[in-house]
Image 1 (cartoon, rainbow, N blue to C red):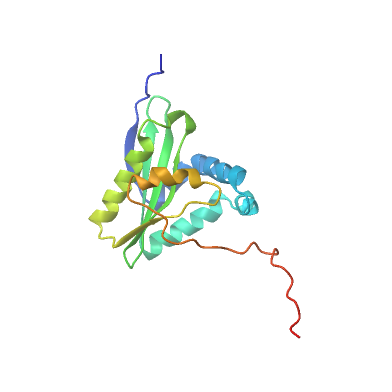
Image 2: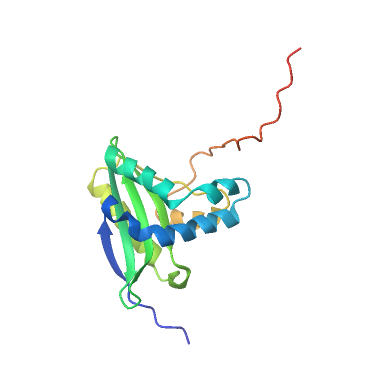
Length: 168
């Protein structure tokens, strides 16, 4: 017998309510830190306050929305989706997380649908989502919404470049 699905309520905020996601964001950062093969140090040193500065900048130069999935019985948020819309109308799902105990119940799907509807309503001309290296298992989830890899961006790990040989 499966456990009953806890009730979930959805609500929306903006940058003024970003602190609500701090504990969940810390969990997604841990998730990425554990799975990262190359950029583990990035996730070990990036804090929510660092990310919050970025979110504030997104809100100041465009628009930012935070969709929340909350369990009213437990009295806490169990999932979120942060979405930005740049001044040139590029939409991006910046961060998405659902608490492990609440996964496979359609919460992530509902959050992304809400985010994409908001982007459409606000005239986005292109929508993106970046998936961290080591988290490729998220690709099938995003494919459900029409997201596919378009390009691969390689970053150099600082201090790992091979020494340059002198030209002869």
